Length: 549
Image (cartoon, rainbow, N blue to C red):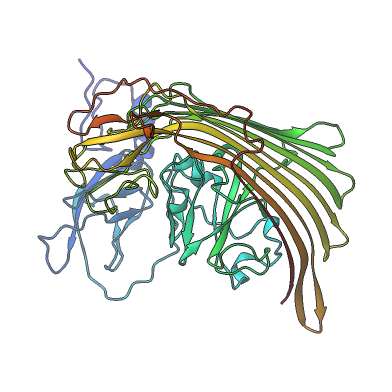
């Protein structure tokens, strides 16, 4: 006879088993029966007590890890003995529902609304959103006061923020993270021209003024940026340079002594390839000689959405720091950047932006007039030609720093820095308005050869003294800057002599409605370079600063 078991537990019908086995099995089923009774799925629905037809979406079944769905239903697997479930919802009174053997497997829970409800501590976290706030400032700003206690408005951008946004240098929308800051520059390779509070803000690197007389400095690459600090308004604690609108300070990566090997790759549209490496560690067993090495290369095929625009970059930045003692160190830092890019402008002005004339619009901006008005040309429209050689830029910067801490309250810092920037190249320029045929742009190549030299030295001591119950922060320092600029710019080298013996520009027409490219543009180089040529200017400035708070 086949074995049968009744569905009503714990009553069991075993007609043919011996009595002793039947007795032991009966005891086992009695012990097991509570677990079997609870090993079930409890289903239900949570509704509003005053409006039972209204489901409560997202009601929590505490202790069970379940919430109601869009119709107010829930399902709880009761895998262990429980005496009740607790149902809660924001704005409603929490209710306990007893669970017994008589509880139906499907129930309805009606919650009563309440006007007062105290929330427990809530922590919201996500893998997609990160917190970038920082409570400290770098030592390059010469202050020891915590950021929250400063009366100065200072905002900081962290390297994590730059990386997560996909930016790769200071001109790549880094300023969008700071309120009230705008950038004005046609080419991303000429430097971050940042404006705030009605003026251009000074560009600092590691607290040193490296802003040249003319354009620049070259935008710092993200691979060497440790943080960017924006100081809004006049900052007496820095060096009293630049416009009182403020300044921004780029702090480069320094040795930490912790072993680190990081390799970062970025890929994007228009054949964008970029590879960066970061190495950090110690060069001796005692941990006195530390190093940091950053390198970056941007692909040979990196192009743009604009025709004939491209960008090739290379950077290497070694840093050495030697700790003479626990309170004294000397560090040396060098950064070399090399650019190759097509200097062209995608900016196209509508008629009337520039006054008509021979110099419109080429003198004040590289924009060109579009006869059809703003937005009438394709986004990839360009006035450049592929036959032009790339624009060459070589940028060298170096720092030498000595720091000594006398005690826990006083510290002396002496720092020297230099920058040399050379750039050379030719580009197409719309040098006049074609009144006879407005849709035909009259292009002519121009040539630039610029060299910038900046030498900066600074020494400052900062510390604190206590008088009674008041602690005073003291800062005293001196800054010395020497800046030189030599250039031979806007050279109109592609000319011819007309029948009347007058030198005329050679134009390369371009129809904006049907652009045809492929003209052979002659390249140019000044024989002998900048020796005894062009404009040269020296600026020497000395700043002495005292601050007592």
